Image (cartoon, rainbow, N blue to C red; front, top):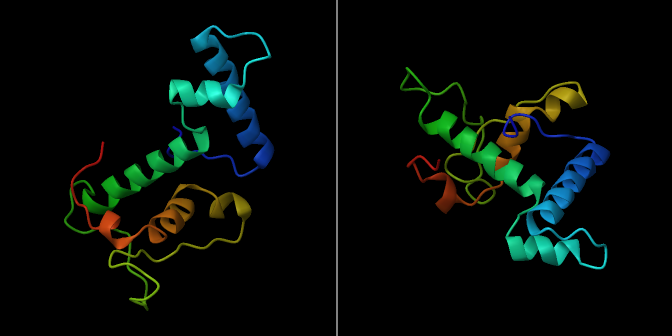
Length: 129
């Protein structure tokens, strides 16, 4: 579900990070407030939830792009014009909507993230997860 849903409002994202902070304290049994939670998360090797959602979103788009079920083509179209200086070889046309809710939904957000990846990453066709 975190691949699809990503809070566009900062306060919702902050609330999720606070839950991870409490979880880190629970995992380490460190309930006193004299311990740095940032160092605790680094010790436990817990990445930020936003970066985990980004990785998950990109993995799901990768699966959709390269392994679209029951078809040899993908519904994701390349853009009409591609600059080899600015874009990579697997660039996807951005999907634009009129509302913030749509523009921050899975496909528009994931495509923007996908198009910002370097070429040596997007050409990998092996399933990631």
